[in-house]
Image (cartoon, rainbow, N blue to C red; front, side, top):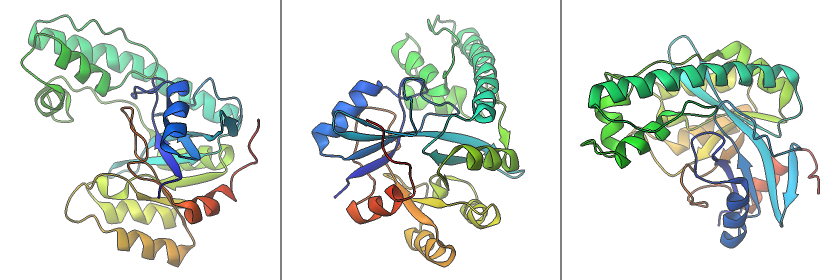
Length: 266
């Protein structure tokens, strides 16, 4: 039974949960704890690394994309403190996201001859653009927008600035109680991604998530690595819509993670 869902996005990045609806959904689902892990951004309405809200323990987190030299991967930071260096990096990345979003929207509108009605803003990501394409008069749904327009090889794609892995790990280590690798089998080279856990002395690796990148997805490999290198196992729904509990931690695994986090603030 999932009691902790430690990977969820809100409207602060590319999710549809508000903070209030996230907490309410967790409470209805019987989930004791959720982590708010918006992309390259710390939720501005969370004022403590861990807080109790309406009976739900809310962990202030972040999902930070980093450049390894061979591939871009995502790191999860849990229990984010008030660290000026990480906040400065997030501000820099959000400025880049605003400009990148503007260029992607312009490219799509020119390609399709439509007005998407999307204004560049902090937290803007390709899912927002894909939803706008789906809702427009264009002949593409959400998946088609990525497949034919704004995916990494698409004609409207614009790359974004990404933090180098060494700097990203250092920033998260200084700011967070725990630092882990997100969804290792979503990457082109899962073994290289998993090696980051050891090479950069991470605290955790995400074991439980509701999708597999390929038949190569091997939970046993993750568990063996975690046992060998004393890594905590984390997990969550990676919620971008409004469902929780699709994946996450049972009571025993949540207790192990909770022991490494700061005490909750009421």
